[in-house]
Length: 233
Image 1 (cartoon, helix red, strand yellow):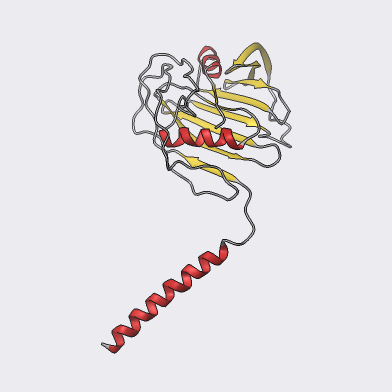
Image 2: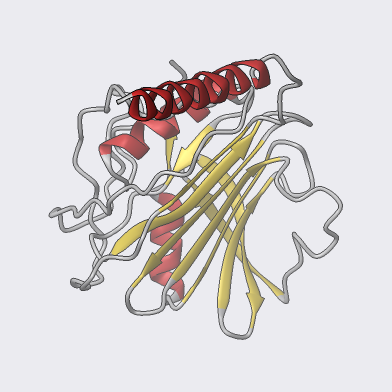
């Protein structure tokens, strides 16, 4: 009996020490604010025709950007039944974004934390949010990746997202005017894959870029035009 009591006290002591160490670490220097989420691909694809994401209730426990690093989450893809990529109303924060309710709330947090306007995509139900992250220092930046099961890939960069990268805004040819949501931009052929791009305020700290491959030019242009601005909270 005495041996069992000693073991019990030893285990409780280890827990108390662990808690004390964890609390002591909270007083240290804060890390660069950055939030990242990764989404696993859905098991099966559906037809690749543009649809708008329906409004969803923002999750109360959704991640918000702060001054310290936050753990990765695994949001679920948000299927959307509508037949065309009509930009949704932005009266509910983040509700129009192609993403789960949790990630829609994440976009709303980014819009509040960053100094520039944050945009997200409205895509067909065969697409899902693969990865997104943002950070506030140096003017702030946000990057977003969407994928589908047919090999399509869309990358979005916003703010000061590619400082020091000379090939960030390169292209092989200019294809004319195009829109990035409600912003006027330039349509580019980025490479012969083909990869298309729309550039807005290229080379500035408030730049916007969307690139896409595995898509026709017309489809890509419609996706770029359907980007929506997330209201600041």
